[in-house]
Every structure is written in C-alpha cells, then in structure tokens.
Length: 183
Image 1 (cartoon, rainbow, N blue to C red):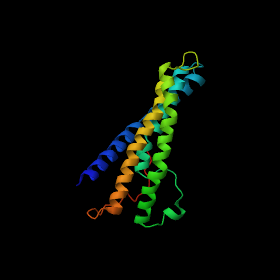
Image 2: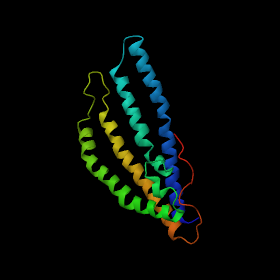
Image 3: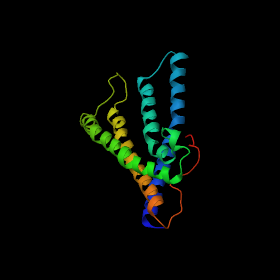
Image 4: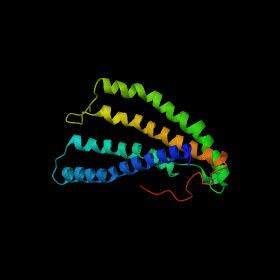
C-alpha cells in the first residue's frame, strides 16, 4: 500500500470515528428533549439552560457528522445522470466536484465564519437568556470544526478518486457502491 492510500485510509478512518462518535449524541438529544417536555408539561417547571443544550447537542450531531456523511455518499445530489453512470464517470464527477465545489465552499465558510467565531470567543459570548448556557462561543466554534472535518474528508475524496483514475496499481473502487447508512 503506498503513502497516498495510507493517508486516504487514515483520513477515512478519522471521519468514520468522529462521525460515529458524534452520532451517539443523537440519543442524548432525544433523552434531553424528553426531559424538557416532561418537566415542562408534567411538572410545570423547566430550565432554559437544559432547553438550550438541545441546540448544542444538535450542532454536534449535524456538524460532527458531515465528514462521515460525505465519506458514505450521504449528501444530497442529483442522481438522474450520476446514478446509472460508470465508475470512471462518477470518479471524475467526485474529483472535480471536490476540487471546484466542496473545497472552495468549505474555505469560504471557514474564512467568513472565522471573525464571527473569534469575536464570540473574545467576549466569551453567552446566552442572551437569563439562566441560559454561557458557552455560545463554544457552540459557534463547531462551525470551524465542521470546516476542518469537511476539508479532511474532501482531501480523502480527492485522493481516492485521483488514485482510481490515474494509478495503474490500484483496482479499488473510488467509493463503496451501497446505500447510505443512517446514523
């Protein structure tokens, strides 16, 4: 196995582990939401901080699983032409799409959210609600983490498709041909 394939496997493994780890927060989100509903409607009490925690947990689930979703071909795409196409055609679409769409959009989000997140950190932004969570700056930081995860998995996609198209020593498919698995 050459260095590019080892790097690709490492990046894929990282996306897999982070995505699976973040997906477990979905269970926590359901439990916290149930707690909020029960305390609010059964006991006529509640906590703003616990209600806000659902938003934080949701951000971890959604933004933490973007690399995993990309790795497993789970993002939205138009399959009218792509679906029945050959593996080489799909590899070209994925390679060029990653280079000219995924990476520029991800870097755009990273660049334009950097000041937004850093400003939040500089003032240690907290909830505008009384008794809310004082960690809005951490919540906003998840945007930067999402960009980092997308760049890493985007690089893995570029490497995988490039090797499939141009390497004579690999016969591996550029991706798994299976249905996307739900987290």
